[in-house]
Image (cartoon, rainbow, N blue to C red; front, side, top):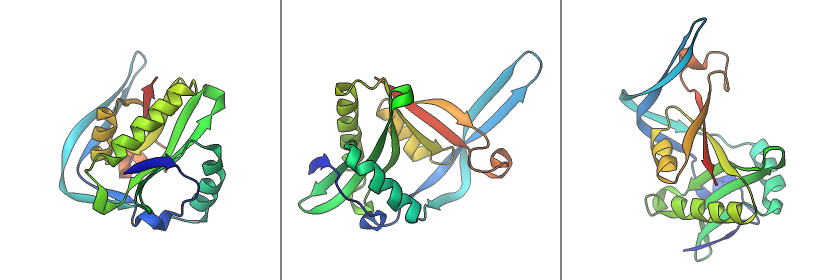
Length: 180
């Protein structure tokens, strides 16, 4: 396995992008005059939750804009691209933002994602970033666990990031960070 800077990438190269989860973090918010409390409780789901992300021209345009910046990486087995991490430097707060991390389904659970994040971390430290940030969803418990294992913690919650009814209808955005 060789990891190197990614110079080109089209989303369909790695197949479907998504996840399956048997759990979710239920978000509870309590607010009164003296306190705001937000709690995340891990709960089992009655049925597995499957999520796929459709790719569109906006994704291709983002990749075309971000790859030349030099912070995105590809994992290769020979000539075959088997994993990517797409990153963007955020100068205003001196962080490196991960837009996407994806490993081809037949290569998952082989530490490719961990290897990609380790090199992203090394590069971010070397370039003087103060943290690495990313966004995931309360249903994506496998990703949350993986990011925790890689040193990320939940730093924020946005209860209306996707829609005005995120809390009532489903997915809530969780923001994670790894301080360097």
